[in-house]
Image (cartoon, rainbow, N blue to C red; front, top):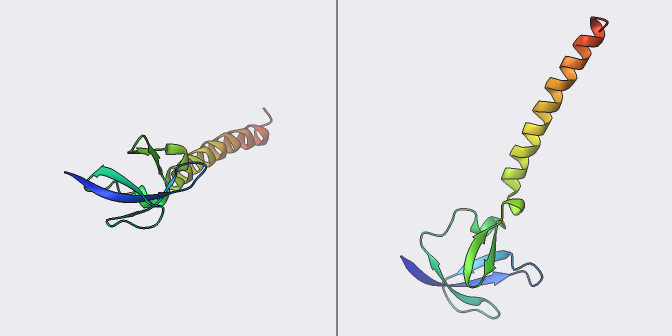
Length: 89
């Protein structure tokens, strides 16, 4: 279902910072699908041509997962290198 919302955005990036159901100051009137995406208030969306668009680079949870994966890969590589040193390879 589509519903009228009022969206506050950062001026330079259009990052969604707040979504409410009534007109307020400089909030932009926008039609959005309901239910709203779970991370729309977490700073993961930008307002583009009247639509809320997900921006993965702004998703802090995804960044944490990516860093955890990179760290795990680094630890495996480090363990392999240390094993080779211990074996004299």
